[in-house]
Amino acid sequence: MVQAIVGSGTGIWDRNVVTGEIRYSPEWAELLGYRPDDLSNRIEDSYIRVHPDDLAYVQETLRAHFEGRSPSYEVEHRLLCKDGTYKWVLSRGRVIERDAAGQPLRMVGTTTDITSMRLLAEELRNSRDLIANLTNEIPGLVFQYRQAADGTACLTYASTRIADIYELVPQQVAATVAPLEGRIHPEDLDAYRTTRTASAADLAPWHCTFRVLLPIQGLRWRQIDAHPVRQEGGGILWHGLVVDVTEHKRVEQELKDLARIDHLTQLPNRRAFMERLDEAFQRIGRVAAGQGDPPAADDERDDRRAAVMMIDIDHFKIVNDTYGHAVGDAVIRHFAAVLRAILRVTDSAGRMGGEEFAVCLPGASLEQAEHFARRVRRTIAAGPAVVRGRVISFTVSIGISDMTARDLQTDDPLARADMALYSAKERGRNRVEIATGLTCGPQPLRRNRVAF
Image (cartoon, rainbow, N blue to C red; front, side, top):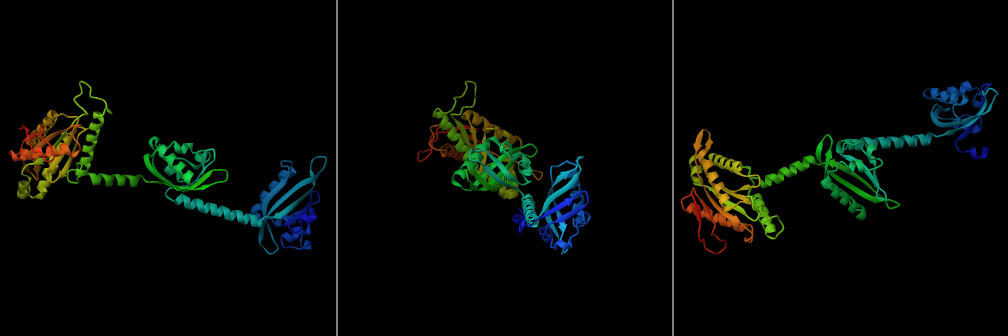
């Protein structure tokens, strides 16, 4: 036993509780840099070597064992060395003799140098605190996501920013990711899981942008980026970051809108209008192919058709030349506002360029489109543009065509409406022409129905 202790950094002590004497092995003295004869055998002197901050704790732990409240004495504390420094030690002991009344008579124990372990533990604790402090300052959730071979998953590490990203605390996801996935928008959950599964299968980076529904913040956008590592037993461990990309998504959408909106009128531009027109054309094709429901008997809307019109402000060059381009822009904005006020929710209009506009009325007949055109003309006549106190009266010419499954492409009805518009301008302007007998391509203009 003694041979095993030699060189182990452990010393033995033996205390007579009744007389207050304590004896130390040479290894115990050497532990603190003393020779055996440097140490007194009085227990009072042993307390002097205990660090003042640890003394009360040591004495209370010893008292608890003497009173039988603990099966043994065990405490980590600091002891003063001969050179004036302190060492961290682990003291263990036990009362081995008691009198008939249960009072302690003799106690033996060991003291082990644990300074290096304490320093290592402190370094690890400092490193952990440093990492936690750093990750908690990152504007996003730093996480470690562990998925076992059976598919169960949890976050073995989550920075405190999880409160911002998911409105959760780390403890809620330490055993399961169910609370986290419960925050993901139902329409995005499949994509979230699919990208994670693909990342696990190929050990490729996990990247996904998705929406969350949070109790306080409401609808927000999140982006996850993480790198996987395969674990023993078939599990996967990801280290990654989840950030808030709501503002980025908002700006992205604004840029998309700006690319599709005419800045002067705030109507869709030519590109955006043509996309809406193509949607109407595709819908007509689907209904004609039997992929949609036929209209009800009392429903004026018929998805087998649509009306398309081209509109041009008459003599607009004169307005610009007479009043200037600023007034001309005001007239264009005024007309766009008139158009927007008359449109139904399902209708769409766009500025095709200059003073030229286009309108699509899904489900409308030519007669309904003619009624719409007349309403536009009446509204303009009753409410001319007023710019800087000056009343600017103007008129418009309108060409109308129908769109049906007989058309080969989206541009066909628009081209017919444009030809009808040209005819209206040729016939004196401020009028509506319906291109019921117009065809596109090399065939000639045959017949128009005129609506004044």
